[in-house]
Image 1 (cartoon, protein in one colour):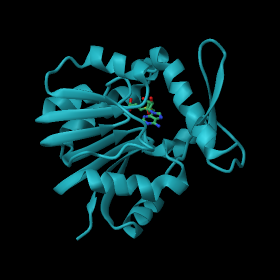
Image 2 (cartoon, rainbow, N blue to C red):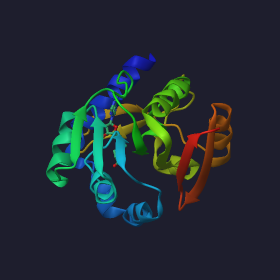
Image 3 (cartoon, rainbow, N blue to C red):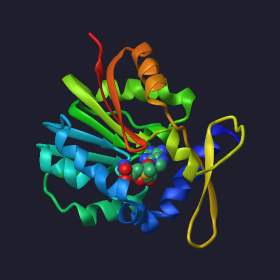
Length: 214
Ligand SMILES: C[S@@+](CC[C@H](N)C(=O)[O-])C[C@H]1O[C@@H](n2cnc3c(N)ncnc32)[C@H](O)[C@@H]1O
């Protein structure tokens, strides 16, 4: 399967499944615990959130930020995020992150459970976009599944791009990109791309804080 088709199927999955998306946040103890980590993160000033989904994190960011710009490509996700995050300091933007370029700079760029959906070949370009979005002294903060997350996924054997199959309540199946980054390897990859990065693991997930080195 070609990478563009896989990314289109990934977005189709999130659009079709927006109404089901919050269920794991309600059902899994670690996902209920994880958002509490926001309090200890250096979130400040004007915040850009990439792939905001239903706004699980947007409302927490809004409580810490001067203003939040939250981007997602799925209008169904954005509708839920808007309903959850009624704040005059939050702006939602519908855009494809593989084409979108930041129109300005931000003090914090935040993305939860998005990095694992970026194909490996697109990671350097993605991190360039993050760097372009950061004001001097700004930080990128990211949260995602570590290798332990693979056990809960229907991982596809040996695809050209690391991928998994997800199912919705109506039985429909979608392929998505899913890269289970290991903290040490990701640290080394980001260092090679010119970032200064700290990554810690929290119950199967990881939290990273990165800034352009030098
Ligand atoms: C795993 S969810 C993460 C949502 C949210 N950050 C969270 O942690 O709950 C991935 C999100 O990426 C969005 N998405 C998928 N493809 C996208 C694309 N090409 N551009 C922007 N957003 C996309 C989906 O609509 C979905 O909201």
